[in-house]
Image (tube, rainbow, N blue to C red; front, top):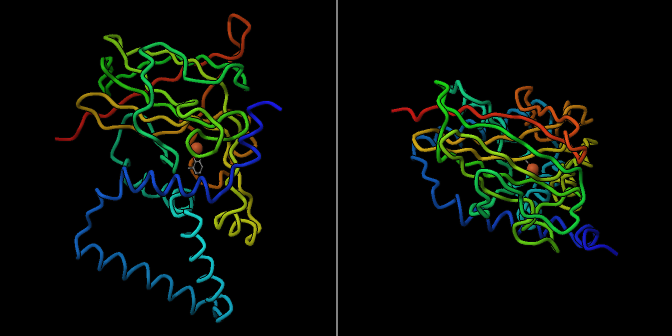
Length: 287
Ligand code: MBD
Ligand code: FE
């Protein structure tokens, strides 16, 4: 049996959820500061919307208890990061980036890990010997909205493997598998070699998967490559890039696909896999 099937067998929602919760707590939750005025306003509005839904739909005690039981299991399964990033983050991202004139972005999702290995301006993402998936060579540039190339720009890239698993969130994968950071030189150019990720299915054995099954939805996200692009004096861009023809581009469970984020892979000139060009334009930081 290949090493690549081991992860398939022992990946569980609870394990990836626990990793995502831990990751969030160490990177982001300590930075959360919200004034009492905003908490008062937002909590009241959200609760009113819930009350209104209950009245409008004549919600029963059975339904209320089903909700309560489900909410308890979201926490037990460590799936608050997954649930919120799948069903809520896309609107937060829209609001946060509406002022930009550079690249469109998309949600970060629960599986970003800072500190991936640096591979220079041109390099190959860490991967296993014989990593499955079509080889992909991606060239591009990072420029500012005025067209000037950005030296010292970084692209952090992370994506699932050909079985749909993310390193550090599924067992049996090397720590930094399919995660890397590139840094541009004076011309703002980069070249990244990796492999095509597979479509991603939300874990079906956790609370989020149970909601999806109970509502008769599907659990799929189209294949995607995550990036975080940064450069001195510029707003950091978080995005996901997609592949034309994926059957879930039009019904992503996370509502995170935008037409501007579509890649255009072509057969590679050397006959080995695919090549593509995709550039990034960053907005200068607002003063
Ligand atoms: C993912 O890979 C992802 O990108 C998002 C947003 C949610 C769940 C899994
Ligand atoms: Fe993802």
